[in-house]
Image 1: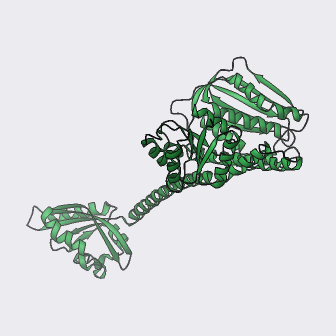
Image 2: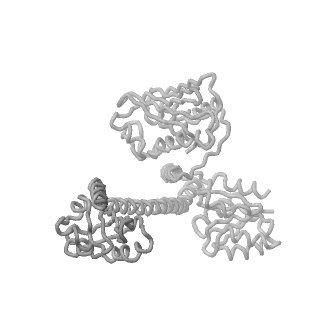
Length: 121
Length: 384
């Protein structure tokens, strides 16, 4: 069975890049351009992992993550935050979200899919 | 007879006082005044003695606050200290005066006299006001400066974020293309896309270094301290430039003292400093030249010298190289090879550890030595 992943990013270029990299690596990929759609897809598809941009048009990625953590259907899905904020101030908001980690932009295309697979297990 | 003598003593006292002093009788008429009163307030003796104080100098002394003092306050208190009066005199302009008054009952007879000392504090006041104004201005300036630093720091954080987002696409897609993940490229295409990739990576390095510079300047760069095995660390760094060194047929020499101790420092930052300096040495040294690193213990510090036999630095440029983005065009270095921030950033990172960094060169084409120190133990709270 293919692993499933939900990629959430409002920048369509970045969304395409991450989707293609995960496609090639053998994932089944769902995409969303904002948090509301992402939450709907996450509840319906229950992906193995969620790749979440921190800055989204309708809410902060951290806020979306907290909503997902309150729902027992999505509570345990691992989340990787991908953000261009590398300043320590930018990371504070995602601290304390269980089962999550952080990857800074620009992503390393050669290791990205591997990092995602490793975080599922 | 007695009264006359007392009067003389009074006059003598008054004459010796440098400050303007008046003696008034109980009807507030001037009995006598000190010389300085005439000098400071430009009034004539013949228009003064025997006159009502308010009438002095063509009624210039008819000052409401003075009337308050002499007619209301003094009769009730017998004395008054440091009573400030400001008045615009027609002859001498606006003055600020400090009045001290004493009411003295004469033993003989029932009349009383009033001693009135007038200190002209106009100049002092001016200086004090000036100081206060300067102090206020300084305070405003400090607030403004703090705000500017804050704005700059926020601006840089935003800038970094905004630049990274498109860079993610530039670097990401060109990397995937170059790796031929979705099919083979023609040689020319591979070459072009590699140019996009290296330029994108260069831009990312620039952004990171500018951000680091700003962080150090804003005092926001924190050191993550651990014990660093310097001997192996120096070897490790030399391996990183081995390829570059081999390609240019440069000889690299490592002289590491036997007793070189471990130091307490930030691992990543020390590596960054060393890498910046040794890669500069490679960059600015022509084929067939030599570069090297020397490390030894010096008291409570270690001293590291990164040297080369390369292009050197003209004496007029030895300060400019720390300004950032300063680079001398040389036949050995292409523009894309460095950011121009490696050396200034390294200096700041050394200083952050409490060390010093300096550059020596005997001139053009005579090589360069960068010497820096790092303390073996970071002093508690001693880091800037």
